[in-house]
Image 1 (cartoon, rainbow, N blue to C red):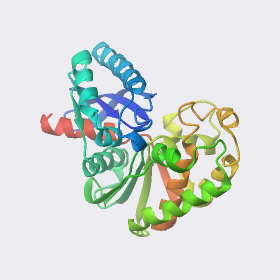
Image 2: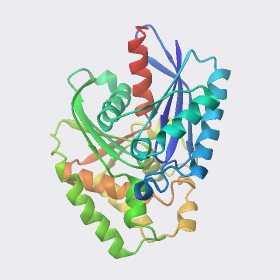
Image 3: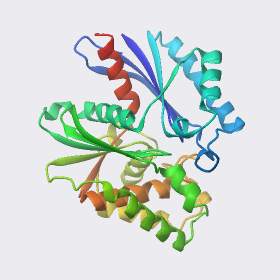
Amino acid sequence: MRISSIDIGTNTILMLVADIEGDGILRPVRDEHVIARLGRGVDAHRRITPETMSRALATLKEYKRLAESHRTDRIIAGGTSALRDAVNREEFIAAVHEQTGIRIDVLTGDEEAELTYQGAVSEFSSRGSEARFAVLDIGGGSTELSMGAGSKLQSRMSLDIGSVRLTERLLRGSPPKEEHLEEAKKYLQGVVSRYPILGSQDTLIGVAGTLTTLASIDLDLPDYDRTNVSGHKMALATVQKIFDELRTKNLEELLAYPQILKGRADILLAGILILLEVMRQTQAREVTASDRGLRYGMALKESSKLKV
């Protein structure tokens, strides 16, 4: 069976087209992402603006076309932080269904954390059922940490802070002022203090754009290459070094990096700050980047429901 799963995030809308084989193995056919910034202003006003709604609709129309061109058997879509928070989300959901036929399921923070965990660890299934993982998903509006052994999730936590939300609250300048960076750091220290210390056997896996961008910068890749990015390990000192390199650069200077996309440049520092504080709080010595996440977990769950 071929499934298209769509992750409607606060900053990015992603679509995976994948075949689910009889053994339950997921085989990607196509992976797409568009930075639509659906959550712009949602933190302050709790509304999706007409501009961002239109942009997201255009993206989803194109995804529907691509899914059909790949002869997809089923299309599923999940909304995350921006849709959880927006008071006019039903207007957006209705418009999407009317214009594309796609039905959006707005996920709770716990559901998002669980599905992201399943998607991320699917890439490391060869390590066996006893291997311990902690999956960190730094989204635009929220951050999830999920912990477990093998594919079995044991605990999860969702925090209502992400790279877009933190940028809009505290890091508006380009580059942000030093006092604003310090204020953001202190704020995050309080927020992530709920996160547990990881054990020495836990592998911290980081998903989403902050992590894949960091890995691409660390590897000095001229173009994005998931085969090199996924599985790339970075020590805390490496992440700090990249942050220190970027923290004084303005938007134009950040965009000069081939690894930094236009829709990510203004929120990247916030994402790295979140990563740094989580690594310090959990005492993680390194993080492994992965470009798998929610959309992969959604596809796996759907295949399980359909008993493929």
